[in-house]
Amino acid sequence: MHVLTREEMRAADAAGASAIPGGEPSLMGSAGAALAEVCRAYAAPGSHVVCFAGRGNNGGDGALALASLASSHRCTLYLLHERHELSVSARVAVERAADRGVVVSLAPNDPSAALHGADLAIEALVGTGSRLPFSARMEHVIHALNAFRGPVIACDLPAGIDPSTGECADTTLHARATLALGAMKYGLLVEPGRAHAGDLWVCEIGFPVRLLDDHQRTYQALEVLTFAHLVAERPQLVDKYAAGHVAIVAGSGEYPGAAVLCARAAARAGAGYVTLFVPKAAAATVRAHLVEVVVREIPQDVDELLGALTNASAVAIGPGLGRTEETRMLVHALCAGLNQPFVVDADGVVALAGFADLVAGKRAVLTPHSGEFARLTGLSREQVERDRLGAAKEFAKAHPRGPVLLLKGSPTLVTQDGMRPRLGWAGTSALATAGSGDVLTGTIATLLARGLAPSDAAAAGTFWHGLAGRVAERHRPGGVMAGDICEALPEAMGLARAATRDCKPGCVRRVLPTLP
Image (cartoon, rainbow, N blue to C red; front, top):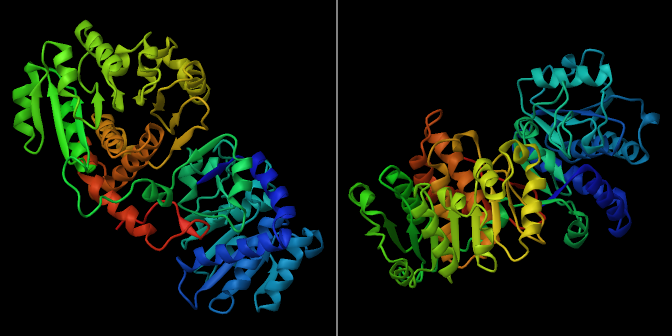
């Protein structure tokens, strides 16, 4: 999906108003209809819907949403300003709502009184045009909405969130759901804004894809619709090798579990055949925990290992290998000698410190967290954390022939030279558990084995991993382990496919599937 900052969306709005037949009134009409559709998901016919509307076009969107709902719901529109103070488009929208039977009045001094008897509230105060500080009157409305026990739907952006950074004002709306209009806003995908947005919905409301492409200059991201389309369903008639053969070089006597988790994730992600190469010291332990995976010892001769990897569709390197000179030499030899796509994680990434050029020109993905990335680049961890986007873009620029970089964090960033960073935003704090990264590595390896380009495999793997974390958290709240994330991968994919079966680009849609 398209992800825009405040400035990018403002430019897209201006371009859309002149490029789209019907201009601004058409966009506002589509926005109001889309917002009404979201409200219907949270309020049954006959229920009472209240909207607080500001003076600008965001308020007009809210008014037109009530106009669409008026035939099936009781609707009341509360204005924070006199009608003559509204924008021209908002004033027209309010008149249309009144013509449809919506009760229109000024918001009372005590906005909580306006919510008595309401079943759902719409916040259409400012949208992406918010400027701080808010007036005392607007703060009172936000406080009342936060105290309201029914669902609150934010129009485009909850009041108080900066759409370009995700930073929140002292007074910020806590929405049950947010409908992003035209394009997703960056501030809805990152903390702390993400925590205030609730269920995320999006609708392009008629903006042409090319226009949004032209104005999306900073980020991009997957949603459930693009994820499900990117990861094709396995054909009905396929053998295990055609489904993807993943080979993994991982583990050590000290960290056999990393290898086990990586291999299980590759299998749960749909690889038809998984071969796991581990050091002799880890072999017995690993075999005791894996039945469906072929476990082999890493041969002493690296050329023999490269020969054994020839038949693999994709290779994963690094989880739990340890940080020894032997590991460093092994990783260097593998990265230099492999011809198929591969993913390098954890100790494998550390082994490439100062030698990232070994993966130049390769179909490779590196998946460090901030500490491993600091070792890879020579930066301090503090420097990386201070500007993760800048550090990732600098690395990509310094390595124009690859690899794809997946920098784990909140949000995760997937980038390479010449590519707008993709945000890995779908995760949850449940992913912050030992072994979670090993599951991600196995998932990406399977996607590489299924033929996805490295950048797509990294982005799709990150989204899938995040969704699996949400599923695992639903089943085991407060106690998710990496193995739970691994076991949740098939269910997460099933939910994604079910959520997008009747969904098309441009429609009103959730960007994450509803969890059972």
